Image 1: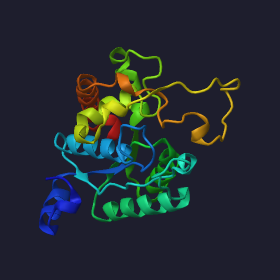
Image 2: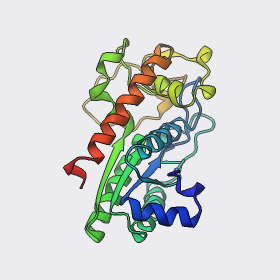
Image 3: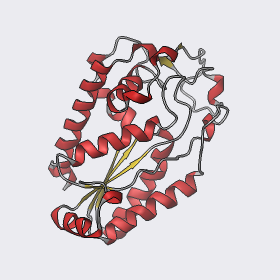
Image 4: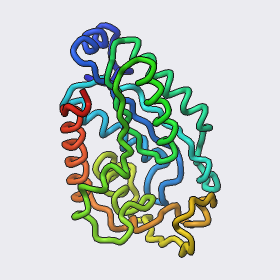
Length: 240
């Protein structure tokens, strides 16, 4: 048992004496295609966190479920908090873990909008406490070691081949493959510029890419490789 919220205080006390590693999962509640749940990012982050904790071990903090998803708020069901609120909240959770003796913090974050806030939190924690932090930006993290799995040209688009495969692995009961869409984004004449268009201008389904190409088989390989890579990092000198 590595989930802090499901432990007794005695179990937590024993675990903190066994390991100095804590994992902080975070995600989002936002449109994720027509076929995947709004909480897909957090579901993926928590599944990865628990799988890693079974191997290393580590304490797994409660999921921070809602992130900075305002750009997607034209789709019903999308929830969001400000970057300042998110940064303060996850930062305070991290401070609590440091208080209890954890010296290595790994943020497993599956929502791109949370990345800058976590970067700031991690740097502040390192400066203030002399600890070490790292972040797994899930959907970017998986790209280098999964190229051989995909058959479409945008496998890492939103709710596309990779995301669908991941959810088929970690929460198959939530996936409605019969509603999966294949949606190509409109052409962008100036891709080198960071632009601030609403997400609805890119897709009317919530998918960018081909959600129909996802499969459990790909998800199994993807998940296994992700966990192995995280285990290797956590056990390496780079994270000591």
